[in-house]
Length: 462
Image (cartoon, rainbow, N blue to C red; front, side, top):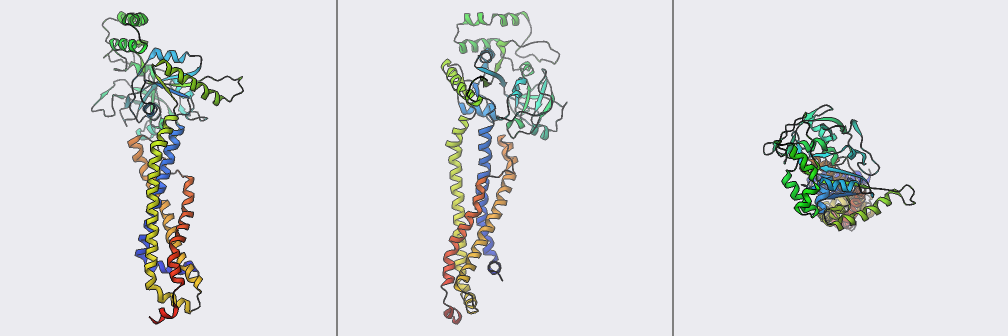
């Protein structure tokens, strides 16, 4: 009969105490696994989701909020930028691509965030080195839409489906539902990024929706402040747009319901964008790698935008890295410390359980010794018990931890928009079983020494 067989029979004799002590180890390990997996997923997402472009340009304010709203769609946008500022960025010789995006609306079904943008959005890699893949077509005309894989799956939409948008909020009962419909022309392949839970519509159609064109009076005030102009300079600069609007006397641009057949084109004065995605130019004749060229030029352009003091340009990765290091990293450390403490307490409970059983097992140990078992054998049996409880609890904890992640994934996605892959695995999990083996050795040593030193004659005569 092997040592582990004897140890297993001993554990079964104390089944209730053994289950409880093993479960305490499993709970500690499961919490550690859940923390490691969810933290790893979030860290990977925040480090990769925005790396297809070099900079995000948006209104002055919080860099973290700009990235959260533009890339992750889990924060409200700060403000808007004038359309002619986007044109200035697009025409800058240092910029290879400047892609405007507009936010603020949600799908009527499912309340998924809407992005108004141009077809060039999909020419930027979803993450560095990974282009977008689509079933169907990308945005082609005014009322076209492209939806993420999660949007298609949860809403049951296919190519040709039509949908309406909610303006100003996720709840259709409290916000305005636009009458216009967009038609799904393409469905994105899964990317593991917030794009999976986003619906993209053509920016031309986005501007034609009620409430998306800025009233002329407000637009003039905004441009005057943004460009630091006098009222006379402002009206002179936008004279062509003002003249075109005045020529359409009686047409209410601030509240008109634009139908698909309406030929109206929104002038640049009334257009605003939430942010601008920028990819920097590279020189094919340069000896420097393209990635290094883009990073260097992005830093220079970021400083240029800051000096203009009209907007701000931020790297899509750096603010999130700081947030992860300063906030999420500290929270993770605290949670890991707590789970380590739980595992330590579980180890102590195993030690106490086995140690307390020694007084009841002295006669059993003495009989084993009298039948020829050596001190080392008895010591090894106690260590085997500790090993079975710790490693068994650790293995069950691994399964339970991934089960927690699997159960939490849809809740986290629904509440935060973050995509959690329940099948994710972290390399740090590989150390859990070796750690439980070491723990088993530590907690089994004292009871093992007690068994090792058992007085055979005294135990048999008592």
